[in-house]
Length: 243
Image 1 (tube, rainbow, N blue to C red):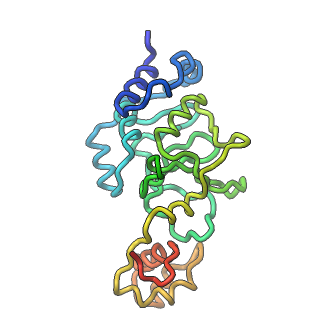
Image 2: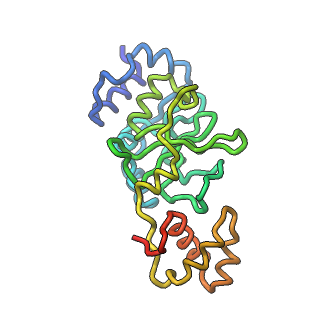
Image 3: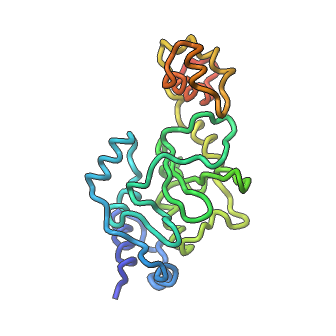
């Protein structure tokens, strides 16, 4: 008899079009996950997923959407994949060089144990999908790292590894720095014409923890305008021209 988890994995693979040979054998899945009280949950409502995408302004990758429809989350000792209601803007735990305002496309995908696992919904990795990365943690001197080229490849490896955070294994090779790659693969956020004359004055004031209220008051603009300037300038635009 096929276990509920094996049935879910089989249905997920079929819906996304993944080669079944890439999935761990049924007995291996049962060995790894049967001790978990309930690794899966009832699926999310399609309208809830649509509402999430409309609210946040980003589409979920097909593989993640397909899994959430089958099981609203995935659990072992902690949520390897959050339920839809808990997938939200990433909470920063590590300082990132040259980053002042976190990209709006960074979302927390899960929190298995050591560090949160996140996804960048702004671009697709070449040959992959929306990339997966870790949040990092200043307390453990751990930097954010890209750990998979997309949800499908990450989730398949999680299943093969029995839910282990394999990206902390000695010798694991990351795909790079999530902020460096974000800037490499996405255009700078646009800068409205009315704010362009202020860019050169704001640039020297940009730093983590900058007092946006004070900057806004000194320039006669809103704090939201300061954030728009920060988002544009931190992307590395040399002449403040924007896209």
